[in-house]
Amino acid sequence: METETRDKLIEDYYLVNKNNVEMKFLAEQLVQITGIISRFIGNVEDKELKDIQSKQLSELSKQLKDKIYQQNKVCEEAKERLNKCKTELENLQNTAELVPQREEKVLKARNELRRIGIPFYAFYETVDFSSDLKQEEKDLIEEQLFDMGILDALVIPEEYQEMAEDILKEYADCFCLPDVKLIGSHIKDLVLDCKDERFSIIVNKVLQSISSTNMDAKTAIFKDGRFQTGILCGHSIVTKPAGFVGVTARLDYKERTLQALRLQLNDFQEDFKGQQSILENLERREATLDREYSELPKTMDLMQAVTLVEQTRKTYDDLQNKLTEQEQKESNAKQKLQQVSQLALEHGREKVYHE
Image 1 (cartoon, one colour):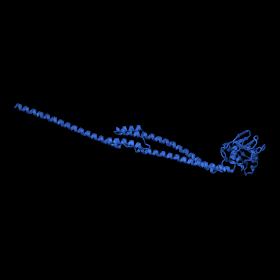
Image 2 (cartoon, rainbow, N blue to C red):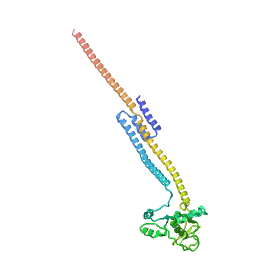
Image 3 (cartoon, rainbow, N blue to C red):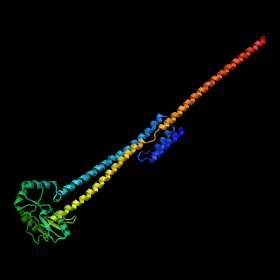
Image 4 (cartoon, helix red, strand yellow):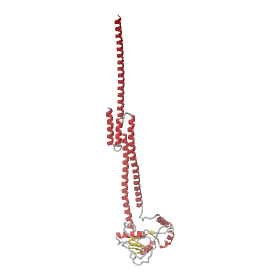
């Protein structure tokens, strides 16, 4: 019975190791467990088995906890991206129009102009494309205006320009100062589109200051992508659709950006769900590890079998000792009886002799 119990416990360990998902032993650990069970006699060996189990549990648990910790960080980052995108989308939905990216120093300058009460617009807010332009032509012109630094430059009525100059001595920004002394035709692809009459004169002067044919002009834009501004000349290529010149373009640009953000938000939501699912799976694995550890084969039956064998052996030894003692007593009694018989026989012989 004891041998069968040992064999069954060893078999149980190998079977559990095969079927378990998380609580698995290394091959060398199984060899150690087999050896311990083979020589199992009590509490010492039981502690050795538990030490191997605890050591492996600790190692596997550490591996899972490290993965859970890392996955928590991944989930936090995914959630941060998701929330940031949500906020950006909400802010854009509540924004009338998008504006070009501006440095902090430019924002401070324009806030100061507003505070003082100087009226201004960004150049792109005061013009639109002529109706006969193709989309690719619009895209190129806006790209040229951006590269030249004119697209988002301030347009300030002439009567406020001197005051603006004083303020901008301590702030960083630029505004248009038109020069209508052109040789050649001025640009016809841009037209005035500003309802504030205070800006009609200055915007028209700016447009009349941009040549479309004369490279010697102070400011020029050409259909092949070349441009001239002051002492600089350059060439632009289209990198994105026009999104600022003209109300329609700004609305379309906002809608394109909203749609892109919605798609991005959906991707971030799916990513967050996926990362959460990975985390939840790791946590389930951790719970499975604890459960499988608690269900590892127990030594109770073997302990009982070993105890029973020991008790049986002790009982047998006790009986054997008693039997030996009894046999010894019987042997002693026989010896005494023989001695008595011998003495009696000898005594009888002496009596006959004397008679």
